[in-house]
Image 1: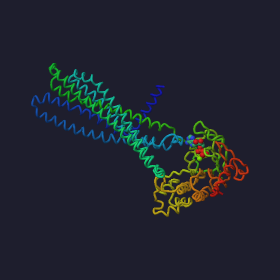
Image 2: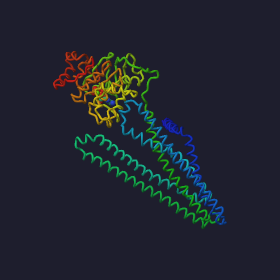
Image 3: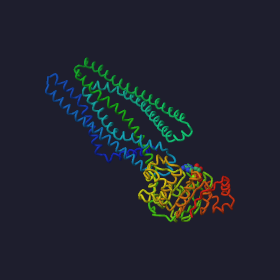
Image 4: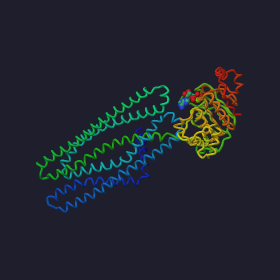
Length: 592
Ligand code: ADP
Ligand code: MG
């Protein structure tokens, strides 16, 4: 088990390293700069000691000037290194982050429906942004910090030892206290900041929800309630942030204090050495020691930051990898690319369930090419599910679905889906213009084809009546359109796509009767010459279907023409009578 885990972590490490590959040069230079940067840092105390020890007592002014010039030049070099590390290092980090993000995006595009049933949008967004930011911070600063700090700590310690190994050991003995205090207060601070990040997440979620639902809020006149809810998360943030700053205060002041204590220790112990061990330790050594002690302490602080970055980065990368290892939809190796279907659909003993519960139970049904079959039945019976199995949104578990005699498993997802048009109750439109949204049906369509499709969907006249015509923005998800207009736009999209198989899943159920009638004409045109599965809530709309299939609890209960089913006097008759009583008989889809 442990070995397995190690292996998994190791491969995680390998995956991470792979992102450095395109940036080998930058990375190597970054490391080189870091190295020089650190070495240069050691120079100041060394040169100062030399000046104090030799040049000043001997009045060597020329040498002092030369040394100062050298130091100046070296600092100039150091500034250059600093620039490189900060600029190119960060750019490298951001490039790696962007590569990971684009890998993640392309993976998300290929993940199956079922993945999105179980993962929330907000969470996925957080992975795209926060997590990857943490990873890139680690990618850029991690190796550099680790490198600089380890080098600095070790070499500073060695240097201190050359001045006075006794004093160095005393300093070294106090090191665990520094690390302990820093670690504890840093951890506290991290936790507090994590909490405040969560609170910001809450504010965002609350905002997103409130803004998206503002129309509902207005309709219910619940603005005050929303305000209260918002204030709650807003106050939550202030509270969390205050705690975080408290932790930050503790951390900063305790670090400061501990560092100052070191100065006192050096002064005290060093002073005693000067007095009692003057043969080996003089005031120059003491000054050198005081100058160098920071070289030793500050990297340790950085090292502590590094471990934290490491934690954040690993967590972020793990979360990233979790998605990346989720299997994507894949075609069979020898899957067929079908140009265009004839359109015969055969369900053969199809059984399916989302989890353990069976939703489709051994359904067999053949829909001949060009015919319209209607699925009716109580809500939750499995009609939508059955429709979703045809474009392989979910894989059939038992049995098979064949189109023109070929199992859909043997057809590429792309060509299968290109041949199927779906109009659903909920229309999803993208933010953009009318043209953009219709063209979604065929990205390469010409202007004429787009207009033609709009005409067939009965939306052209409306579009051209607008000042900007096809260039009119439809608002976020089409918010500026009526339900009927949205639906007609989605129908235009399918006209443009021109598939041989059509699925109409309660396409008009959300609309009022008058609007529905308007859309029926477009739908009736749309199903001409295509094999159509229509799911309808209002039975009047499917009266003329070639066959009506009653689905109940995942099984086919009855099937036949309208007249046959009425004569059968079963479930359909009951449904029909119930609706007839409401006088709900207008609007027919006539596909013949
Ligand atoms: P219908 O379209 O006939 O109203 P559905 O096919 O939408 O019925 O749903 C059939 C059953 O499957 C319902 O019990 C529903 O709760 C369940 N179901 C639908 N979609 C999912 C899903 N994505 N995950 C889990 N269960 C689902
Ligand atoms: Mg449904």
